[in-house]
Amino acid sequence: MIRWLILTTVVVVLDQLSKLAITRAISYGSGVEIAPFFNLVHVHNKGAAFSFLSNASGWQREFFIAIAVIAIIWVVFLLRKYSRQTLFCFALSLILAGAIGNVIDRVWLGAVIDFLDFHAAGYHFPAFNVADSAITCGAAILIFDSLRRKPEEA
Image 1 (cartoon, helix red, strand yellow):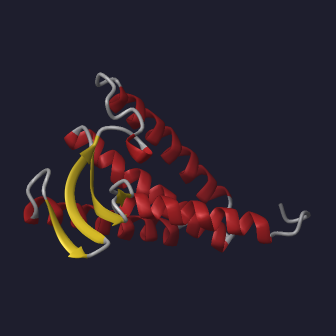
Image 2 (tube, helix red, strand yellow):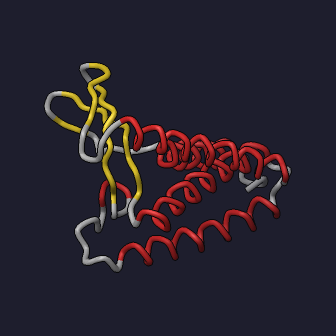
């Protein structure tokens, strides 16, 4: 299980360092155009994915922290139980890292720091960060892993 926790730690450190770099390089609410379809921005998301509940009255912070802590405990349990299933644990490690990275932001800042802004034809995909990317990649790998298994392995 130690290798999965090392991977998780590496991703959390990368996530937090990238957020620190953005907060030092770009003032809150501002952005820098990198390419015609990509900006680095400095925004805070008080909600969940795609800013879900970001305009709520403030109760969502504790709610999302509680959900993340429950998810973290559950993922650690699964990593321990299935530590020999490489692809499954790789995916869980990414999800765990993303949950930890974003919960650190919520605890210290009250919101998640987002900075990757992709756009095309006037449409901006909601800004996201390394932790969000880790969660998304981990979920995609979980789906792939579940589809490739034979029914008797599941």
